[in-house]
Length: 490
Image (cartoon, rainbow, N blue to C red; front, side, top):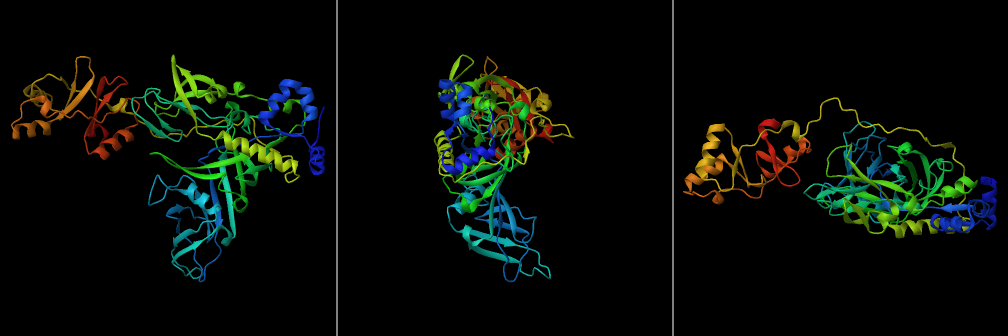
């Protein structure tokens, strides 16, 4: 049994099309079987609403009088990219404002623009004969500019990993705040409602596919960047008219100590052309599996600890290393359901028709990591043996070790080799000047440390930020593995 786009669109036009959401399709297939579901159901709608960092917008402001050719421009103090024609720009959602960084960025500008708020435009330029104006400082709303086009190079990941943190420090990431020692877990994506999970072979989703985007109608214009279908990490490149969209489905967001992004609402309508699509659109959260990945290891190939289903993650907890870990979503299931329901309503009211893709997306594209032409070094590559003293040592013993070994730092440990503090040659000098004789009077106990897998630029940044010249290298149990100093970094 097969149907065609034309037949389904004719039903939509006549108001007789049977449309259900992907969640509803699961129950229909379970109750009636794939064959009957394929015959009865015409369209299945999907939805997702979550942070999509590869998002942004092209804007055209029209020409000023006299004209200007922007070299640099800012929208609400967020630096936008020019490099196009005179008064075009692209603003990316992760670009942070020069003022209030980490609080406001490109994603917030896009939300404010769609909400009808005034946006401040500042720009400057080198002058030319045809573009004599050097500076602009003005305000505009979305209806006062020519084009406002949402253009997102990578949206709607087929699945997302579940992020955890094995290290002994809190991590601030694009997957949110990850607590140490597997203190929590975060995941994203809509699971059974996810657009690409319901058409994993891209039978109906391709170049030209009409979609729900940001509260309006948008289009797929190709495969997204980092499209990796073989590993079930397919992505979409999408565009749409911002003037049709609403701030409910485009939300600027700030991640603590990480940066800004944009929550994007996206949904697809999948025509049930055959039994195969009926089966694919009935996939459940229990059937959708992803990896639990350790973000405590700061490398591209972070270790996968286990696999877990969306059903388990959505329960609020996952089991990891015989421990129950609280698991929270980065995406909104409420808005994902609302998108699928809204798209369903549009179709039922004959406001949204389906179109076959002009070209299907790749199903065998392989994701390639960045080629590194110079060696990337980590702390473990440069650390050296730490000169140590126990926490009950006399100051004189510490001083003698500094002189004998020609070092500036002595790491203080307890009997279990766990870090207790650090003493520098300056601390010894100051102790003599202040007539202090006890180690506890001069030891620094709040020590900034490094781990073996820290890139050396992270170690350098820690030293610069804290105005120190060495970092003890410790493991997860705070046991001392060595030390890295500014000399090694230089």
